[in-house]
Image 1 (tube, rainbow, N blue to C red):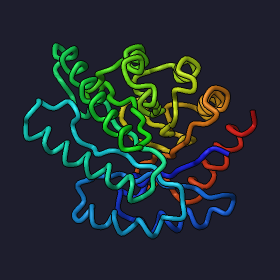
Image 2: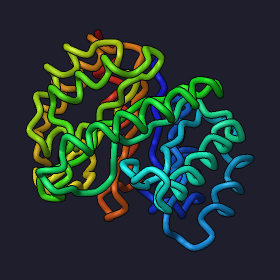
Image 3: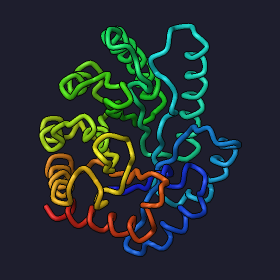
Image 4: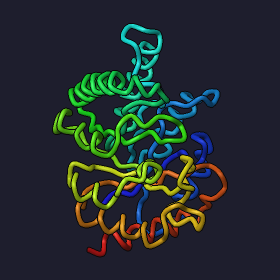
Length: 272
């Protein structure tokens, strides 16, 4: 069976005891954890390191820092990014993680600057994915950006083409919520990219905000049937990809909801 993970986003990257209890009380099979490697919470780094022995018996994947990748070379922002990414690489080995996902960029940008930002994003991606590969890190690159944030740097075709430029060892990670916000055809994207996709962030939203609802939330943009169709495409075309439930800490992701979603995901993705 493929690896299933629960993102620490659902506990605002800090209530790790609740997360541990949610996983402990799921009796069906072991569920792993995706840890963020940076956040603005006070004492975040110290608290994160304390989780290494707590969760060492579970599969672990990491999320690279939430910092701007499209920096000006030599700038303080680039130096900060370097520091945070180097820390994340150390954490990868400390956690004995199975993979780490990184973004193409983080923030908004002027429309006329799109070509320059895409070129810089590719430059940074090539640099850091090669460094990670050299360190034995399994790295994936995630689709990010959405219209309301004015941060759509890569459309669907551009995102697919990006992987022609990256080393073959670099996997793709599809965030279903980000794809919904940009009205991408997710099953078609999965069919096209196939086994280059190594992982997914599974979440739903309201169609406009990156709200990270549970995948079957009744207020979600994608219906129950549409989510099932996405999961069937995942099962058929990317049988080895790992799945991360990446839900927001807004009260929707209760323990019963998380447990129910995990069971439904496994029921569909293991049925083909």
